[in-house]
Amino acid sequence: MSRPAPFSLRLNEDERQRLEAKAGAMPLASYIKSVVFNAAAPTYRKRRKPPVAEQQLLAEVLARFGQTRHANNLNQIAKAINQGTLYVDDELAADIQAALADIAWMRVTLMEALKG
Image (cartoon, rainbow, N blue to C red; front, top):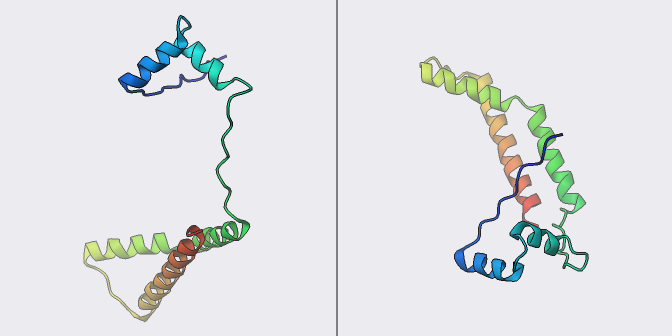
C-alpha cells in the first residue's frame, strides 16, 4: 500500500515561531493534526454552489461547443492563411460569420452566467 503524498505548508519566520511555541515539546506535524482534527475545531462554510440557472447556462454553452467544429475549422483557416492558399468564397465567409456569431453568443452567455 502506498502512502499519500506529504502536505506542505509555507510559513514566514514569525508564524513558524508561534507554531513551535504552541506545539511545545510535541512534534509540529502531531500538533497541527491535533488542532485540525479536533472535534471542537471551527468549521468554515463550504464554497457556494452556483445556482441551477447558472449551471443550465454553462451546460448549454458546453453543449454548443461540443456540437460545433469551430476549433478544427479555425485551425484549417489559419493553416491556409499561413500557407498563402486561402481563397474566401461565399461558403467560407458564411462559415466564418456563423463561427463568429456562435463565439459572440458563448461569450455573452458565459459572462451572464458568471456575473452572479
